[in-house]
Image 1: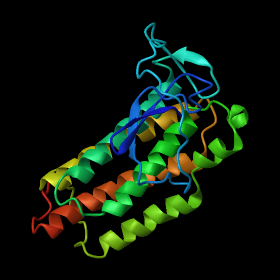
Image 2: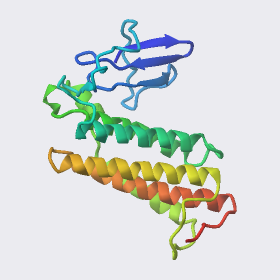
Image 3: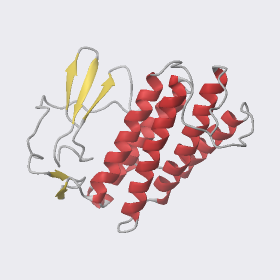
Image 4: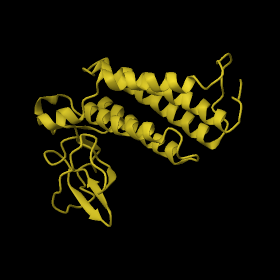
Length: 229
């Protein structure tokens, strides 16, 4: 992925295939001090423009180079995952910022990988290192389940329906939960016509459950009871 250096950060600039192997059309920022989830430093490539004008006619490139309409079901799926990722970023920024911070940071990396996987109609055209980077494993799904179990241990039993309300942190987590549910629906819609790894569907399903529990936890730690319907 080409990128621009600005101060202490790198600006990832997503371009059409073959430079952009994941086929993204947005920007992401990663500080120099941070390595990728794989433990490797990101590649440094030549300076490029942020805008490419290749999508002005309403088309975009999937990973592998296939051009499709921007309202294609696959584009909708990885776009909704991207929106869920951004919503989790907003929830992380809501005070208290230390609530489940490492957990949510790891989830954002997972969602970026899921978006990359959904952007590839087939992994056959991807390099081996890119296939490894976008893989989602059962271990990551089990990690979400463990986090749910741990958070629930400090919560009173759930006996009534809960409204998405309470503290600012809880409200932000509930909003991220609904964005995650939409991403799951889009992935299921895609899976009805094209192959989608079952681990992706399980991960998105489990993630929305986790965000619900974390929202309850945010209220409980702030001394706010659940808002009951």
